[in-house]
Image (cartoon, rainbow over all chains, first blue to last red; front, side, top):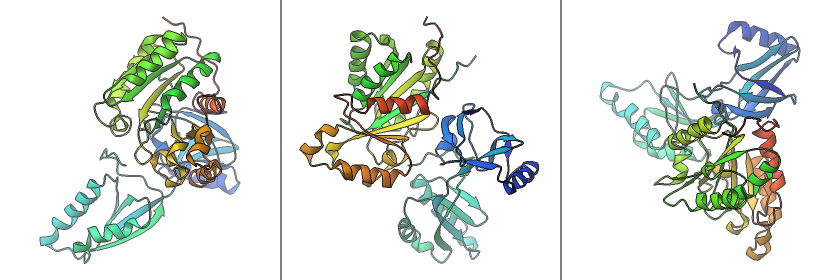
Length: 171
Length: 218
């Protein structure tokens, strides 16, 4: 069992680690621990990597693990965190919002998502938030029906790392 | 100085599913292996479960001291005190970590149905969700946060299955389908069946098979 107490960096935010990851990956020297978003906030857990390495994580309280975090790097092994992709709703706000809609559209969207206690991720004009089933999309199309001229609503499956400046609970 | 963090186990489940008895069964097994546990029991208004565990495990069996079983009357749905806002529980646990640094494990018990119950990752390192067969063999396939997200699913009171028309093979099939690789254990707390397996998961996955602490009790 390998015990890990801290992360070294992140392959998506550190160019040097990214380069090393790509080099080692091409030699099949990389392995990952797959966790869900809830587990990413845990500071103590025991997991098996994609290659079967037994790993105990004992992180400092308050640590949040991120997709691409590097837990260990040696000459013959790099271990990273892989977040499980999630089912997400995607609300894309079209660029046809006029001044008189400038408050109504975003506030209505924010109010509805907030009422459902969903965390969000903002990317440009897209708002992502987790859903349990694809059928929820139909519900959101109804909720946002009056705004349908301004929105495109769809679903996707991808890694979801919510905005952190809003400490929201979800259920 | 901040006290050293003690591993934390959350045990949740519907009212009457057997959370308290599960704790009453696993604590002596852990104690026999040298592991010391403290308990925080969440309930709405009563402290009946805490009083019962204190009487059984401390007064009767002498496995732990009476002040290591703490009843927390949450005044609302207890699952909210372990999920949305676990600050009351965290405050109590940090006090226990400071006063009883010899503990190997702190167990947090909370009622809650399968739709809503989960433990905040800030509170618990590992989450056992317990159901019993009298809810019907449909229970695992109906999913919900508890059944889907827990680290270990315990299906209790299996001796009652033939009396309530519950098919354990259906429950096993659905538990596998819903939970993938994540474990489940069939348990009969009354006889102790399955308790050893539950304890093995705790020792391996929360305590990391570390030996019991050797810190002297004050």
